[in-house]
Length: 318
Image 1 (cartoon, helix red, strand yellow):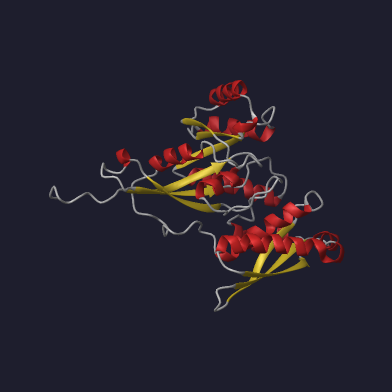
Image 2 (cartoon, one colour):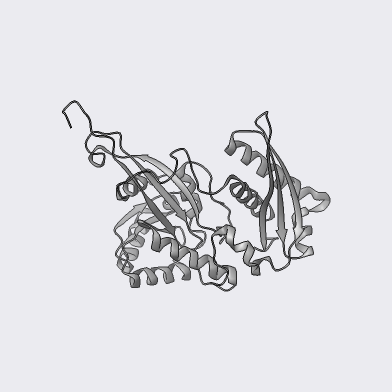
């Protein structure tokens, strides 16, 4: 190579598993790091069922770019289901998927909600499991804007005594504070190699699945505590038109007739609100007009149907 020829920009690509107890903020962090909504975010726990992949393209500093600058890392995030004590078949499949996601990744980030007065049982059990595994994950202490500095330092010391974390970051996933530093660090940990996905791609989920996730999120947000977790959304039809718009037909499945009435609401008011919330969000994400049609049907015992688990990347017989 002559002096006039510059070395090609270095590229890196690898996987990062986000793990934590339910509602620690993993989906919010994923969306913050990727810069787009790819995972469902609600106030309810255990809403992430599949290992949704979000893809962030991040510029590498000169010392990681071969000295010439211009290098880039493709950081592929796996948003695992929250790790908790499983009770149902669906719960067991979600927890199994979470641990598998951590085992397959190039780096593991444990997200802990430090705004709570005390760590919950699920987080304590997770710390025990990590300590026994011999792994050295990265600790991300979330919601630091809600905690006094003295308490943060005490919590950081306690967590690092429990598990030998490789690094500790203090962040606010919702506001973005500290997330840039975390992404810088993760980009540098990714193995050298070509990109594994198209650089313009933000997720490996098909558009149909992303659309279903958005509608499921709006259903949870609107229904609050009225509806059990026995709800799923499937995209039945996707039709694109010459004017750039898209027609999406989806079915919201519940397990009992009584739940169907909850979703519909009086005079269909709730389903209309859910539809409009989802339509606006989808139009913004896809950058095109969206015509959304929602239907509600009863599918008894769908949580015990193997066919429902495959699209989520979960194993039915966990």
